[in-house]
Image (cartoon, rainbow, N blue to C red; front, side, top):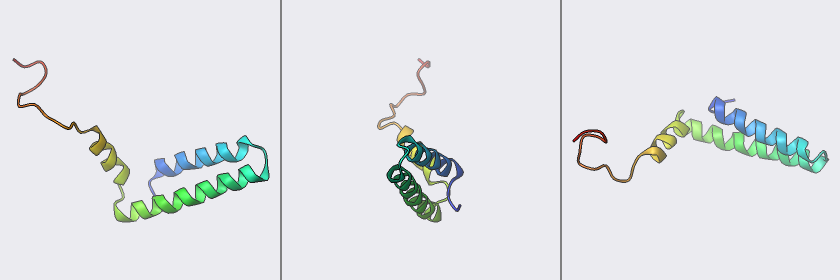
Amino acid sequence: MGAERDLVLWSGLVAFLVGMGGFTLVSAATGFGWWACTVFVLRRMARKDPMLSKVWLLHIRQQDFYPARAGTWRR
């Protein structure tokens, strides 16, 4: 689909749960609309950087401050 596989699968799962959760045409249309919008955004993200979500996760995991010592168990 032109985007990262994991993100497309998660967005499809959310869209399916929203679409089937209400058992109405409105909920089905909302689920399809959610899926179409997220795939559009994910494809634009993948066009800029194919591994953008992984880079973002690494950025979030980084600490704000690294102390000037070797490690936790080192004296």
